[in-house]
Amino acid sequence: TATTPILAASELSVRYGKVEALHGVSLEVCRGQIVSVIGPNGAGKSTLLNAVMGALPPAGLAVGHIRYGGEDIAALPIEKRVARGMCLVPEKRELFASMTVEDNLVLGAYRRKRAGDRNFLDQLDTVLELFPRLAERRKQAAATLSGGERQMLALGRALMGKPDLLMLDEPSLGLAPLIVKEIFHIISALRRTGVAILLIEQNARAALQISDYGYVLETGEVALSGNADALAHNPRVVETYLGLA
Ligand code: ATP
Image 1 (cartoon, rainbow, N blue to C red):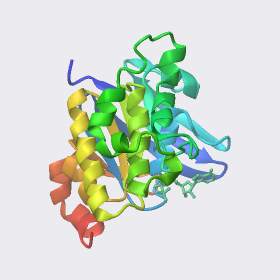
Image 2 (cartoon, rainbow, N blue to C red):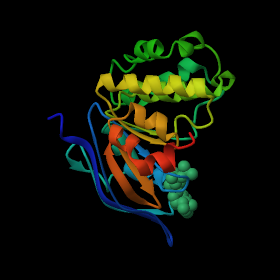
Image 3 (tube, protein in one colour):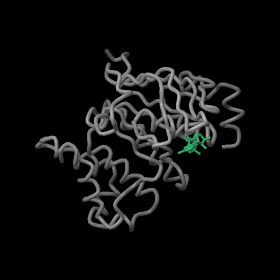
């Protein structure tokens, strides 16, 4: 049903040696929802996404449950999670700088191609429609793109894989306000495709504006959670995260 979460993490803890970066975090995301995790630098936001994806650095040790599509995937390696439709767009966008925009997009469909999906390029037109700037620049090397266009390309490449769960680590980082607005507008529009989106952001105001639900992560624990509207009006959230933004 629509209310069954596609992702449900419970009592998730992560440590890097003696440092515990995440402590007993529980979180849910449903299909067609945008769920954001806000919180200060070092709160454990990236660690949370990496743990869900199975992409922690070797020093990172995760314990707890991660249910995805009804299955506990906590022990699965990253490639099996990718094969099940999970996709993480990391903060460092990891594009192939010397390759063209179009070739970067095509690479995003590589897993589908290898899995024998004959229609592996069926998202290309959709992505180019969603990002007209990429369409205009499809034959240009990725290295020639602006910061905002690179973020668009990273998002577009992720969409080529037709993910069921899209996890975005700070998509607005380092971008000019106008571009941030554009990126958030596009993320918001993705909801209609039915994909579930887990968004990590320091830009709390913009994130809550497009989200259905939100979590505030502080020193590795969920300090607050609730409907995005309610969170955006919560006096503590306003004072700590929205006051000066
Ligand atoms: P930021 O947005 O600044 O990256 P964050 O909320 O994403 O912050 P994390 O990057 O997840 O936070 O870091 C959480 C804590 O874990 C921090 O104290 C950080 O120093 C520590 N940490 C993160 N990665 C490692 C690592 N590879 N080895 C050791 N400690 C780490």
